[in-house]
Length: 505
Image (tube, rainbow, N blue to C red; front, side, top):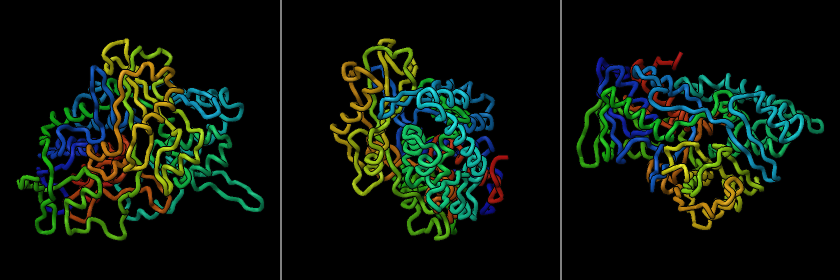
């Protein structure tokens, strides 16, 4: 059997049942291969989980779906039923509501440049919308330059070109006798947007992915552009319904799942991945192994083997995590409530220093995202509401009850009377994420970004062990639902077509 290309019908072992892993499994199975998924937990979904209690239901991972085209393509390529026949997609409008520290409030329409410009002018004053609109034009150029290499193609062998090249066409900034161009997202905000509220709006897109806008490259402008250009979408019933639909698609393609099956190591034969050994000592042979796990976990599965060389992209370190507070509320959801409200911190410098500085912790008043889905499937009846609070926090951060109280206090700006309405709340900390995903400190991966000396790239899907591939948020093209879905397409392509595979056309 050739070492670089799938045989006619291969046995493929997939470690983990996260979104990227299931995307790989479905695509390989529809190509005619025998695929077995080994998941250490009792269910599928990875970071996409669901919590239910007393008739309330919540997403404990991502709550919205950007760039649904990735999953539309997956469902088209793996069966007769398109995505919209398997889940109900709803475009969220307004896309988001923002409460700023100075008392300013505004709501931004979904996927409407003219609507966003008008909303910004009305809320922030004449000219604010134009500056944001011009920024989005430049962000689109950055997107056009990086979309294929950072989302649709396997990582380039000469990936250092991406590390050195800043794709965002920043506006020249003159100060005294010098002319400079923005190299970080914070500089883009300060020099091109010139309004603290627009700065908060832009920087929150980085913060939501656990990125420090002071060091994130200017090319991180693609993050708000993706939302603006392709819209913000909600899956009726929660993102867990998307995971369910993917699991059922895998079953329909005859993918076999083995839950509560922890892999102890990846078996090798003649220098090549040859299967998996489970904790109970059982060895399952395979022609290829696909690992949907974090780099630290993968290192432990291949002891004594250098998975990556010094000239390759190293695994990301120091990624942030999430604190999530699930709220069961008495009283129905007001009709005028926005699906997503961002309550911005009054002290951004303090927040950033505590998130990314030497003294990690939760600021006195962190930025809190409040999610209030208009979805009867999440509540026991119309007289109750399910809401979720999300805060970016340092990975590994211990969370005290006083910290949760601070988050609740901030959220009251978006949920008046919160404490009087509160029936109960459930907290999900970085430790809970670590337990669910196996990732050290409960870190959450960000999407791959260019520039920044390659710090925000992710390791290639191929490894130095022939027959072993990496998939999911900790491999190229990085974290986030669309990127994890694309990692599945890339790994399937590399296995079926071999190293010459160059991505979707």
